[in-house]
Length: 481
Image (tube, rainbow, N blue to C red):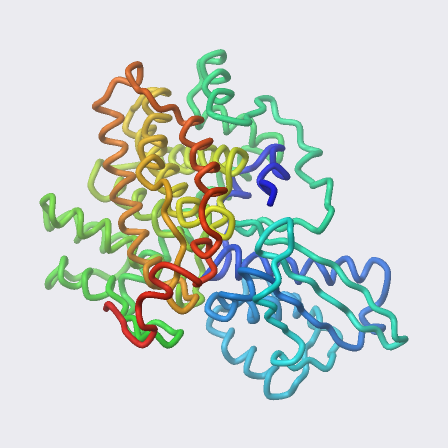
């Protein structure tokens, strides 16, 4: 199996790494959703929707094995309807899917209705894995004249989608002033220009759009992350999926704030600070933030891939910690944080993978922890070498982490793993700030190379298949919550 990340060795924008979408998975939900949209767009180039009689969707490998728990079947239906994961009303998902099932009708791009029975037209081929990537899916359109139109796509992590035998990508047309393939390139450019990592990334982003658009987009990303944290901390109940997992952020937030009165995010933040939390309370708050995001993610809510949905809570939790307890932070620091994190994530994607189906959970929680550690170090005044050192430390202590979701759901152990990734990121940042990078033995590029080698050595059953680890050793009827 090849390293599909190499398909994306060309420039990666911050808005490739951070995508607004719907949970619970970037590779199993957002990716297939985008693939369905893309299929219809390609079909429309050669035929009319009126020529289409029905569509069959074939899910392979990891998409088939954990697709039900990740909502892959739901995602492809919404994608074929032409709905946008950035704007679609998440509260309407259940009723929309129920309507399709009850009527055996699906309205393509909200224009043309076809006969479609999800139980018959979506096939889970768990025993077949396509050679390019475990997350493969094929759309086969049957036309009224008896002809077929088919396309195969691969959801390669973080919402990135490539077509079978695809050799080009739109971003290859983008020429950035500072080409970055690895940490050595990044370090060299920063030293040559005397720019920090976020300053360098900012210059590259100008190749895609205006500075005003980039700034607005980054702040929108944070707005969605912030809203996800706040909603998650104020929503109780049981998560969907059958494991009967209780939401914990709600109770933890209530316990930490006591009788405090507030009405919105800003007053909540003020109430949080007013408690003058000690070390234990701050640890609990970081866990609370991460739990909140991933509980929202597990319930098909609006989240940001960071760099994936399964690891969506780490970066928001660390940034929220920085905002709440380190110092008063203006918007420039938020922009600086997310620019730094995105570049570290892109280096991991180019040199290894951010797909759990390719590399286990080290590719998700490990990468997000490294991204957050670097960003935190940058915002706390760390040097270039310290920033890279923080990312290396964080990943070093996630190497070999398996992806073994119980029941194929992004719940156990995924939600708690985000709390661990956030705490490790903060610890890695503190170690780097207190350390001397000149004496570091392991480099960031070295740990990325090791991560990829580890991913290749890892048994397939630990790569988002639910065929090993906790997924097979813990009775599915039990809940740890």
